[in-house]
Length: 409
Image (tube, rainbow, N blue to C red; front, top):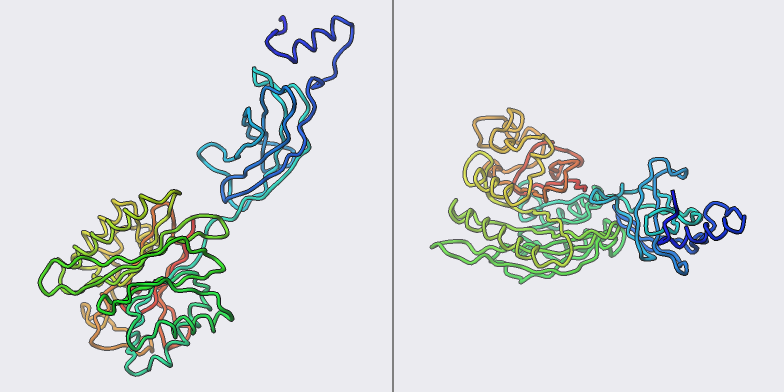
């Protein structure tokens, strides 16, 4: 087969052959120099190298093995390339080996490969979140805020919670004292609280985050417009956070919906979804969403049966349903879930059996939910109770108890 004259390398080989000289393999172009990675995310690595004069293009080989078994090949005419394995992405927390070589118009190598370089992708996003209505947990009338506040801080530090949505942070539950208690337990000034409108009538909700794990990009609050007579004014707070370990962006929200009526709860819940979607839509980068809050809605009755479906159709999953691989968890709870729900539910055993201080007149069917973007998954879910130290109730989703979930990509 005659050499293709369009290939500069082929012309060189033909000229050498006419002179009786056999060209060594890959002699036409030198190996590219200066190959290095410039940045990494959890699923991509950006690489660069020095240009080779007169080169048509380059091929980058990369693999998880240094001998390049199972390699992926990508071509480019630039001297930079983002390695991301098509739409699948690279494996998080994995070392990749890569090399580059000059190619011709037929995408065939016309020079030796560069020296091999390597770089490790960032780990997958993984952190603990919590939702906590702190106003009156565990019959707090028997235990004052000055006693409870340090315990809240200790729980957040002990469980390595990186971001928490708190509700009813007002009045006797002082915002700055809460932040001071958390930072004291964490051993430094690591946690920060987002500002809010300061409306106690809205049952003030705030986002608290660990600055060692997150960088605050933006924050805000949204007051649900009142519509019905006697409707309680409520609000949600949100924070757009960059997770430093992976450069991922998370929109974290917390809210306290009104218990005035099912109609009010549904209306505020719909407004919550719509506002979060508006904030997410204007984000210049892909953004995960995590909802927390006291939704004042039972798992057995309306409106949660309709609202959970709306959350799912909007791309958000409840973490308990993820944990037990069943979206029906809320609607058709097992006997064990049912038994631990409240002091007033279906004559089942009540929470006083756990040895904790629990008000006998509280209907613990008022639930603190955690929802996440469907692309995220819940690795763990528990509800923690005070004052008995270390007691864990596996399934309870209850008003005024701290609900904790570990979220991962």
